[in-house]
Image (tube, rainbow over all chains, first blue to last red):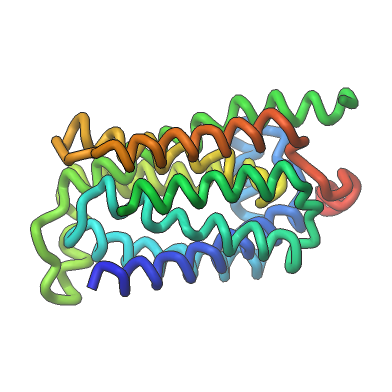
Length: 120
Length: 138
């Protein structure tokens, strides 16, 4: 049961974060953090198709996370879902066309190995 | 390092801890308020009104918004490993506050996660996509 929740969380989170990154890149760098500027940014983001799809995917991940937290330890639930690091790094390179250099691959690989140990 | 890269690195170093802490605390409070089982679909809604779960949800909404802001100037392939230290901190929160067991394997894993985060955070620039592209809609 808990691995089914992990699978749903991983797929939905990876999709959601790639969509978020694409949406925020389209929106542009957030530089102004005054309340009125944040309000304008939120209005613009509410019309951003990538961000809307990202929020929907993150909502799926959120409810699956609720289910997982009800059946598993916190120290298992959160680290186990970190396998999204792999998917997201690959998607960042091939979908978002980011320059993923050697250090990032090594860093992400260390994180993945760490996650594998933590989630045992 | 260019002035622009240094500016983004500083901004990222201010934002990343906020993202990490809100995620860790959000998950901790959700777990703290969670009942032993969620048997029926309606339970997934009613549980949101428990005080600790509601606090956790608010923190996770804040986490989502700050992470979105971070992604507006930093690469996903940078943000993901750098904020992964949250996985280790969440495991620690489980041990310290919820008295969950962490054996040597988990500690070794936490060490690897921190090493990976340090490598990406210190060794690469936050953004590799062109600044012009990031500001086209401003």
